[in-house]
Structure formats: C-alpha cells, structure tokens
Amino acid sequence: MTKQHLYNAIKIFGCIVIVLTLFRFVSLDFWWVRIFDFPHVQLTCITATALALYFIKFDYKWLNDYIIIGGIIACFIFQISKIYPYTPLSSTEIGNVTEDEQHDSLKIYVANVLQKNKEPRFLIDEIKTANADVIILTETDKIWQKNIAPIVNARYPYQVEVPQDNTYGMLLYSRKELVNPKVMFMVDDGIPSIHTKVKLNNTQLVQLYAIHPTPPMPQHNPTSSDRDKEMMLTAQLASKSELPVIVTGDFNDVAWSQTTTLFQRISGLLDMRKGRGFFNTFNANNALMRWPLDHMFVSEHFRVIEIGLGNDINSDHFPFYASLSFEPEKAAEQKMPPPTKDELSRMEEQIKGKPGFEMIDEITN
Image (cartoon, rainbow, N blue to C red; front, side, top):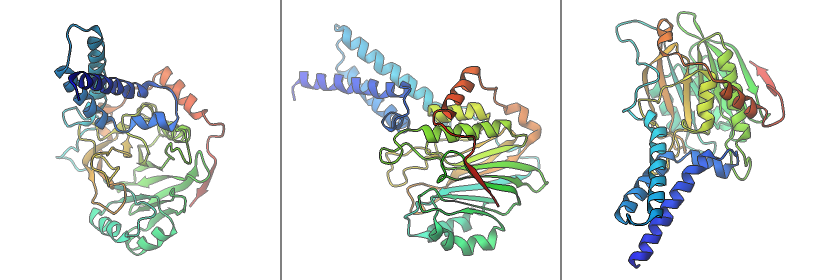
C-alpha cells in the first residue's frame, strides 16, 4: 500500500467514525438506527484510534484535513461525555449507605437466564450464594420454573410466576411480603411485567416494577416503538407513585441511550451505576462487545450498600444485583429535578407511537 492509499484509507476511516456517531441523532426508531446506541464504549475506542491515526498523517496545508479532524475530535468529546458519568471518575447519583446508622435493607438479584440454557445448576448455585431478598428471572419458561422450584420454594414464600415459551417469561420470588402483586401486559399481550409492593422489615411499602420490554430486532420487531412505549408507561407510573420506587429488569437498552435517559428524567429515579462503573451484563459470551442491558433504577429514598455482577450462569447475560439501604430522611439530598415540558412532550409522543391503550391486561395474584 502506498502512502497515498494509506492516507485515503485513514480519511475514509475518520469519515465513517463521524457518520456512526451522528446516527445517534437520527430521530428514527428502526433497529438499524437504534443499534448504534449500544456499542458506545467500543465506538469511543474506535474514534480515539481514528484520531491518533489522523494526527500521524495530518496535512496542515489541506483545509479538508482540518474539517475531518475537527469532526473526529467533536465526536470523541461527545462520546466521552456520554460514558464518563458511568466511570468511577464521575460523581455518584445515589449516595452510599450511612455506615453509622441502622436502616432497613433490601437486596435484589436480577438475571436473564437465556431460555434455551440447559444448565440450571449454575443459577441454582447463584441463588444460594446471592441470598437475595427478591429474585427476578427473565426468559423463563415452565422448564425453568420446574428446575428451580425446589430451591425457591424452600427459601421464598412469596412468588409471582409468569412462565412463557416466547423468551419473555418472568419469575419473581421474595422473602419479604408482596402486597397486591399484579402481572401486567402494558404494550403486548405476550410481554408481561410484574408490579408489586414489597413490605420491608419496618412495614414500609416499596413499589417494585419488574420489566422486560422487547428489543428492536430485524426479524420480529424492526423498530424500538414497543420497548420505548413500555419504558415510558413505566416511567409514568413511577413518577406518580406515592411510595418509594424500584424499577428493574432486562431493559434491552443501554443506560446512555436517548430512551433510557428520557425514562430516568420522567420517572425521577436514580441510576446507581453512575460514578461506580458500567457493570456490563450483556454479552457474557463476548468480552469485546459488552454493554449494560439489565438495570435497577431507584427513587431518592435509597442508598447503595453494594452493587455488582453475579457469576456466569451459562447465559448470554451476567446477573446483576444490588443491596440497598432505605434512608428516606436523606431523600431530599439526591432528589432529581422535575422533567421539562419538552421531555414530557417526548414521553407522550413515544407512548402514542403505537396506537393502543394504557394497559392491555392484568392478572392479579
């Protein structure tokens, strides 16, 4: 390859990086657009590489080089601004537990088990080790329900089970009392979510929403409309709740996407990843292509005791867990500002994006 060919290749590489970054600003919900929300860390690394290569071959006499390298620098700054909040260098959005005081605590363990996974023993070992108060399992069918029944029946007296064979089954088990648990089908009659109140040790109730919206996929759901609508409906419910709130599950979306950012603004909930780390849950089978798809957002009434990833359970997701301290007396210190009119308008647009209803149906346990 000649020097000119190398120079042209670097220019093309730089232009591709710019185009991939600009995809984030395209207001379309097709899967081939929204997919670029996911590999943000990877795209940042690619952009840094393009920037380094371009500096090597930079021609200070050529105006186009200034334009291209300016675009690459702008893309790099934008990408860093999006992922920086999820690094330990940033400040936390939700504070740590107050060590010198006694508070009610709640440990929640969330895992997408991968429905076709034939090795339940890994999850069973994890359930024993995690010793969580509440366990939420997604992609669970009747086979999974049967396989884990001995361990969960012995430890978790409160249960809400919605096994399905379409990869959207959901099982919820709790040591703490569940009050008025409901299975909701908010957007699609095959996509359940579980809404329940959890009673803490001091009789305080906490509103829990467990969700697993469908992702945008070329084969089955070519747009993100269903996912976005379910997330906005859940955000609406959270914002109107008079109780402390936890929303968790496999969101099929990353923390820094436009949809999840809007979800957080509407709901007023806090992201415990900010200032602590990415805690990438997917893809467990590919170390280079990983991002956080499983989330736990909480209201300002909570503080963090511990968060982390579980061990490999032979799924394409790593489990995600968090231990929370209930400290409502300090809620005002970390309360989110209310959403703007523009954010509320965008929420309404996403809810109305697919004609329908507020809630399709519910099953009360």
